[in-house]
Amino acid sequence: MNKNHFPFDINCDLGEGLANDGMLMPFIDSCNIACGGHTGDERSIIEAIRSAKKYGVKVGAHPSYPDRENFGRKYMALDPKLLSTIILKQLQFFERICQAEEIEMNHIKPHGALYNHAAKDEVTSFVIINLLAENFPDACLYCPPNSVTATIANESGIKIKREVFADRSYNDDLTLVDRSKPKALLTDPQEVIEHVGWMVHEKKIKTITGSLVPIEAETLCVHGDNPSALEILKGIRTNFG
Image (cartoon, rainbow, N blue to C red; front, side, top):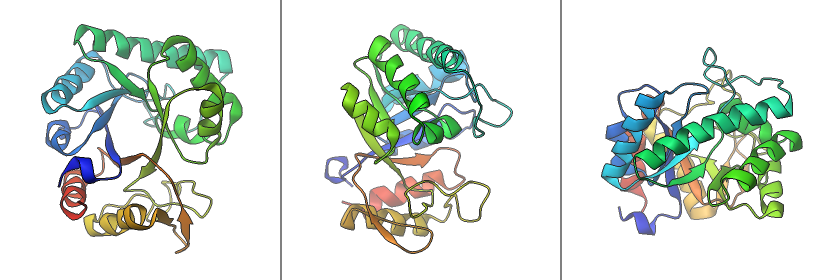
């Protein structure tokens, strides 16, 4: 498949301690690298960056709540100033490594619960967007379509790419089905291909109830920790031209 004919940039969450980063890189366009919040350290970031450089993949920071125990997937009620300090520390850490490795930090994509909470919460969205505006004005923000984050970013002049998920199920309001529920994460490659097919051909998402909801997006995520990530990416590249 010619990447130029696929309507989405394909991104993947990497640098999370798994052994498959190098196998996934040839099939993606951009990667979101854990930078110390939910997981990740200097070594893992360097390894992911060098693999991305080898395959011409854009690199981005994947900051999160400081919650390694829950892999950043549980909401944390933090004071906005403290949250800003925590996220900035992760981003500056990542940027310093990018500079040392002579690669540009292309984008920023919040991880897990931080991403999902910001999508509906103005205070959290403003924390993230103000950090970008003040410290990383050239970076693009990956965020959900029709979200509070996307609205505030557009109003603030922050570049965004609206993101949809290849391997996650959606509720009718376009929020992600909670991971504690069945079928939240799609691991069957053929099921993912069908899911993505609606997005590619109809610009719609088929939700968990079977409803078809219109969507506009520029980037498509496959989770690197999905046990079928490699097969899913190969399937996407094979089936959509």
